[in-house]
Amino acid sequence: MAWTKERLEDVVRTRLAGARLVVVANREPFIHVYDGSEIRCMRPASGVTTALDPVMRATGGIWVGHGSGDADRAASDEQGRVAVPPEDPSYTLRRVWLSREEEEGYYYGFSNSALWPLCHAAYTRPRFEVEHWDAYRLVNRKFAQAVLEEVESEPAIVFVQDYHFALLPRLLRQARPDLIVVQFWHIPWPNPETFRVCPWKEEILSGLLGNDLLAFHTQYHCNNFLESVDRYLEARVCFERFAVTRRGHTTEIRPQPISVDPDEITALAPADWEYEERRMRNKLRVGNLPLLIGVDRIDYIKGIPERLRAVDRLLNKYPEWRRNFCFIQVGAPSRTHINEYQALSEEVRRLVEEINWRHGDDSWDPIIYLHEHHGPDKLAVLYRAAQACVITSLHDGMNLVAKEFVAARTDEQGVLVLSEFAGAACELSDALIVNPYALDQLAEAYQTALTMPLGEQQRRMRRMRRQVADNNIYRWAGMLLSAAGRLVEPKAPYSVRRGVRQVHDNGVPLLT
Ligand code: GDG
Image (cartoon, rainbow, N blue to C red):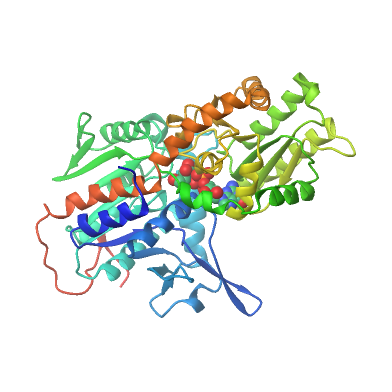
């Protein structure tokens, strides 16, 4: 039976045994910003919000996230609550307020300068600063407090998102052992040898083992996690059942690849499709040339320089493509506070300039670099117009762009060039699978994509479309939430007096 929004709603209604659903994620699904004196509500770009917003719409519930918009306070009530989406309020967003220093240390610091490079192992060195770690611990406690306030003394399933909250599950478990805590880790988990350098590895593993269920995109990431626990903690690791038992509590570890909502993506396709494509082509001055496209946040894990160098290699090897194709790179600015991201942004800009100078002329540039955020409607036009979508991550948990591109191709045409190091490669085996470190192989993949006969494009695209349709976002959420629902009943009833208990982390009281 196919997974749909309706089936997911049914799961939530029938299998959660009356427990509330609370999602915890750093990123809010909606952000309020000032536009002059007006307040505008926007949807930020991120794989996580793209994935979870439809789930929350279908289930109702509470989303706890960092209130990061400059008009967020003005748009929320005294507790930081606001009903969303604005056009059809169906769930509650509870905002957590962070100071500049907290955000700097927890988000830019420990999450994105230590855990992100550590887990991706893409040869960018992680930075471990004690101040960042302290901020990370503090912010995890703040979020724990907000969750406990929201659930009051009711039974609840807390669905925690990502590497920003490795300590949160244990904090929740200490305060409310009856809560069901499930976490999805959206990025890879490294092998134990790579993880070994982290000065706080025991605390991180112990925090994560506060979960009842901890899920990753792939089996490989699960195995790495189990091996890390086995190596660095005193715990019983069961490799047959994929479970860890520590101090009487068991955490199940399982793969559950994330996906997209193919119907929503299809619905984004403009009604007057040919007109929109023509408009886009005129604006970018690419005529009728075949287009290769890349869509990424500017991040060193996405392999953007590798992808651009392969354009250079293609043109050296096959000069007949000169003036005969165009590579469009959409690069949404990201984490621009962090040095490595500034350096990458500069490297990408320089490479585009160099390659265009070397191969281009007055009327043609091989690469068009669009260094700005694009809304989903604009991406839909690009996806549909492309001869190929190129994904060259050096390491990536999943990569939703791969699945969005496939979902957008209702015409069953187009080629996906996909890094073997993106989680999506485990599912989309009909893509042209590449090693982005192998420049010649990548240039050859562009050549194959640009010359692939229509029949072969269609055969591959049909199989990939079936895969994405069957394993959609509703399946991801449905599988995790039904697993959570199964855990609700066996738990002993827990009676607390109404109100919030204090959480202690190593004897330090939670904020009062
Ligand atoms: C993390 C993991 C994992 C919209 N406009 C732009 C843009 N978007 C949307 C895309 C897509 C999303 O942002 C990006 O998703 P990804 O999966 O590629 O990447 P991350 O942000 O790194 O997400 C990743 C994901 O979590 C979910 O678990 O797949 O492995 O790293 O939905 O349509 N994206 C860009 N420019 C825009 O202008 N790049």
